[in-house]
Amino acid sequence: MASCAEDTKEISFKTVKTTEKDYGCESDCADVSINKTEVVGHDSKSEGIADKINQVINESFVHLLTIDEDNVQNVNTIDEGVKRFISIYQEDKNSYPDMAAKYETSIESEVFHQSENLLSIKILTYNYMGGAHGYSAISYLNFDPKTGEFIGIDQMINDMDNFTSFVENKFREEYDLPEGTDLSEKFWFDDDVFILPEDMGFDKNNMVFTYNPYDIAPYAEGTIELKIPIKEVQPFLNRELK
Image (cartoon, rainbow, N blue to C red; front, side, top):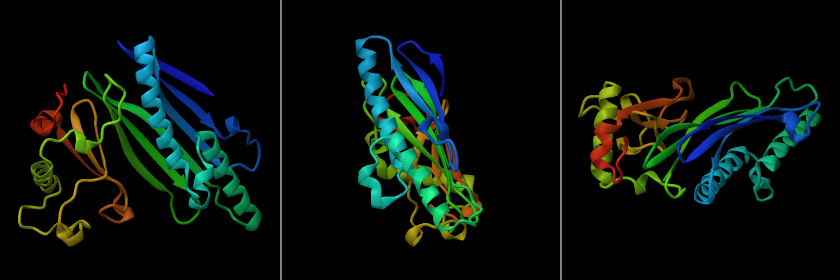
């Protein structure tokens, strides 16, 4: 297990890195790589903020590790999730001794945006459990750094209808779909109605909209991403970002 730290004014971040060996698996193991951002407070107030943020990050990692819906109630920690993933591989390997594929799971997070009024954490996930290819996905967790509270994107937008129209125009410009052109010429949108992605976050300068594979396009198209400068989305936000 290894970690590295980055200091900031109020809190610091460290990345805790673990593999299958850290969870007690020495042989016949699935490949596991967990690189998790942890927030560290430096006084009683910032420690409370850190605890709230870390709880949400942990819950997100547990959710991403819970691939076996039949046993979801038995997976409450990252440790339990990893051990369950390894045991599924071992069970499948025992059932199919000639199985060549080695299962793999990788989850890593990073601080994507940090400013006075927002902390955005980006999470990259990859899972492979046999078949032609694995599956990669990107998600985001957004927080109020002053309180540690999780913030849904809908809690940040003043006028969701106009915001969605604004983003659609940007999306059409980015992917060469002029107004009046059916979105279905290139993408999967039910009834040809544009929708925002489930996964939205912020980097240093932009609001990032991520459609993961299969969200609106075939797997072969990969991740569909749109970036809009924060200064352009700022009029729709109820908090100042810099």
